[in-house]
Amino acid sequence: SSATMRNLPAGVESMRTGDAKFIQEIFGRFATAMIIGVFAIYSVLVLLFHKFVQPLTILSALPPSAAGAIVALLIFGHGLAINSLIGLLMLMGIVTKNSILLVEYAIKAQRDHGLTMLEAMMDSCAKRARPIVMTSIAMSAGMLPVALGLAGDPSFRSPMGVAVLGGLFVSTVVSLFIVPVFYTLMEDMQSSVARGINKFKGKTTAAEVPETPSALQ
Image 1: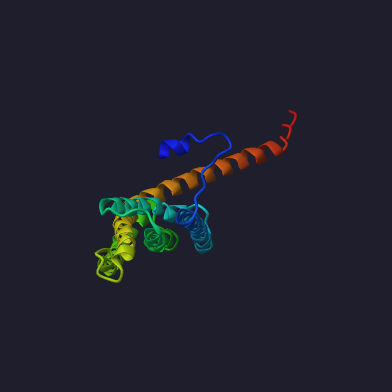
Image 2: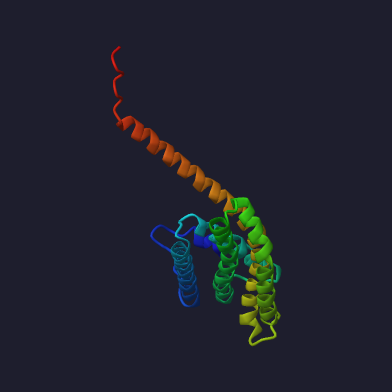
């Protein structure tokens, strides 16, 4: 029993073997793959936007979408297995794409049209909401037969489809409501840090310049 395994004598430890060991190794590899995937996405976004802060805005949609996928799995009675982890990996690309649509348009609106941060994000939400919703609906329609077990082996593919559908639903809401808020917060934080650095540089420069003595009367 679990109580016996917790109260093992000194020098005795439990070891996973067979299928249990294989599943543990697979989960570890998937966790490593997800971490590498997130880092790769962040690196590409930094190269794309030439900024280090705004890619974090795009990645902010990943945790809520993963939570939505896990909740959907629990609702439909599926566990977190290899097939559902594959669905989470698929979800990462879709979620980041939706966020990129919003953030990229807002950055271009600020740079090319001189809009304020709030105006640019509101304009981006108004003009990018339809493509984001249509993409999510199309992807959901494609994954619905998989989630219902109508395509292939339902025991393997159904959890994957459920994970994608749950994450898609949450990511659509997150992309249109939470990402804009996070974008404005990150912009404000970046502006505050830049002002603080400039103020510090100004004080340092003023301290280094020697004061000229006033002319004698």
